[in-house]
Amino acid sequence: MYIIVVGGGIVGYGLGLELQAMPGHEVTIVERDGGRAAQLREELGEMVVHGDGTEAAFLDTVGCGRADLLIAVTADDGANLVACQVAMHWFNVKRAIARVNDPRNEELFHRLGVDSTISASRAVLAQIEATLPEHTVVPLLRLEGSNLRVVDLRLQGDAPAAGVAIKDLTLPRGTLISLIIRTDGSPQVPSGDSVLHVGDEVIAVIPDDAEEAMRVLITGHPSADGHG
Amino acid sequence: MGCGRVGAAVATRLAEEGHAVTVLDTNAFAFHRLPSGFTGTCVTGSGTDDRILEEAGVRRADAFIALASGDNRNILAAQKAKHMFGVRIAVSRVKDPLRSELFARLGLRTFSPTKVGAELAYDALFQG
Image (cartoon, rainbow over all chains, first blue to last red; front, side, top):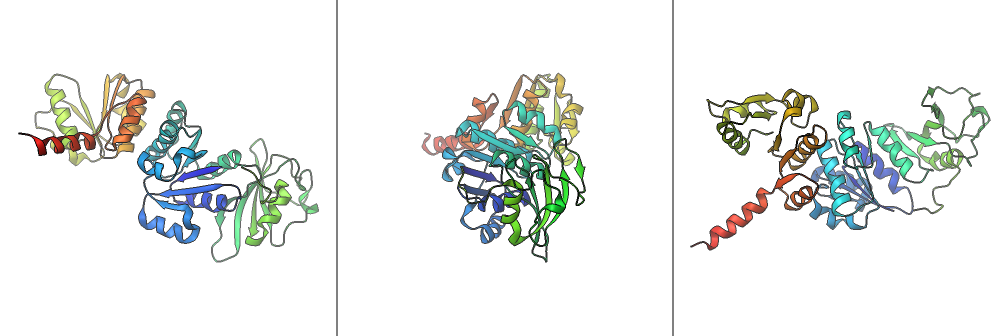
């Protein structure tokens, strides 16, 4: 899949990190601010491009015509809406997702055919998780000064952890399951006896090197099994 | 929406022609561009904000003209007026010629000052 992310703020950066780790996808992050783009480039490399993601002429130069998905996550609703509409109507990109900063704009985006609109940045990541393959580890937060990060995973049917109590799981060393969000949306602080069910959303603090083990445990899929 | 030089001139002309005009700008200072005898109403706030649009009476407006500085802001506001508040005529200034063409196709009445300006500059060069 070829994915264009418009906006290199915190959300765009988080997406970039995650998508970069997923094989089989090509990703371009478009950032309008030159300084910010250069900073992101140092960390994420060639995938970051400096330009205006709402301008058709520029989007053409990053191959928008062959993109499968455009995700607009800037802090400006106008820019997000226009980027999605340009992608869909100028380049015939099939799916466009916009972050909505002002919830009152959600209905307008919907009426204009922008596929999915969500208010919070975390929800944007969840939406992308739903759009992209199911076995995604969505990074929510890196804890500065440690090798820890907070991630979000959704429990898949064929995962080793499905139907198992937390105390009976072999979690990667240093991993803490902090929160379970059940399929009905209710959050639950887990105890050792809490059983994980298919569809649960699991928020966990993990060491950087435990991501792959957690991915396999919770989603049942290693990262390198080829998709997209 | 937008009381810059263009917005102020359009609002003034429409008011002089007897239309009921409301001018929006995020900066109240911009209203100084309107003539002292201006008969319209001024509302301070963003034309992309639903509450401000409601305050300006967008639901009973026959036309909405977006003349703020940013293309995307203009497009957002004009589409909102048209699709959320049922304003029949939604005009938007869109500097980027391609964007202007696209949103004309999508139902806005757009014009590109960039395109018009380039044509005028060319014509000025070869006139006479």
